[in-house]
Image (cartoon, rainbow, N blue to C red; front, side, top):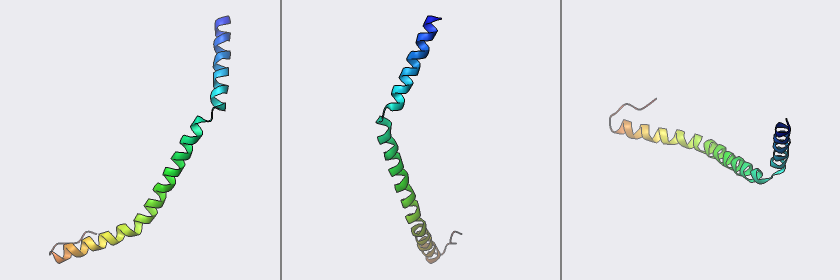
Length: 69
C-alpha cells in the first residue's frame, strides 16, 4: 500500500511540474504562426490558381485540344 501511495504522489508532483513548465509555449506559438501563413498562402493562391487555369485552357485551345472544365 505504501508503494502505491508513493507512486501516486510522485506522479501527482511530476504532473504539477509539467503543467508549470513553459517550454511547450514556444512550440505552440510556432504552430500558430505556420497555420496563419498557410491560411494567407491559400487565400492568396485562390485567385492566382484561377488565372493559371485560364492561361492553360488558352494554351490547350490554341494547340487544338479541349480545355479542362
